[in-house]
Amino acid sequence: MVLFVIGMTALTSCSKGKDKLIIGKWEISSISISGGGYNMDLTMEEFYELLGADAEDAEPIVLEFRNDGKVYMVNMDADVEEGLPYSIDGDKLTVQVTDEEGNEEYETMIIKELTEKALTLERTGMVEELDDDMTVALHFKKVK
Image 1 (cartoon, helix red, strand yellow):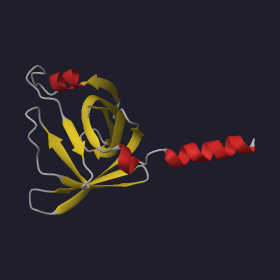
Image 2 (spheres, rainbow, N blue to C red):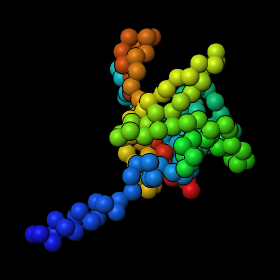
Image 3 (cartoon, rainbow, N blue to C red):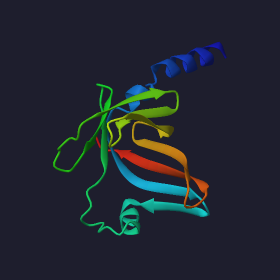
Image 4 (spheres, helix red, strand yellow):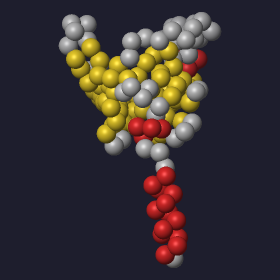
């Protein structure tokens, strides 16, 4: 029994923390939306169609989390947008954004899943048009 407990402790101490696991490129593979009487699980093609966009012309949405503490949006041409500072505290991922007026704001999402191959980020907020909270979950697959 003692050897089992020691073995489990050793395995736990070797596991990567969220701040290390999130490093890399992540492509959104699907989106889940619930609240206000809605409950939808959409592939990216279905999501684009819902928005009225042509799914065949749409580029994948890829985020790259780097060791420099910034997250970048990457397109298929490997062009990288300006990085946004991010931090992880427990199960919360916070990204610093700048609004149109130049004010800093912080967007916080819950990390529902983070493994070496999968990432799910979830955010809940009030939607005035529906007069209800809506939860959006972004499901990512690791691409690099």
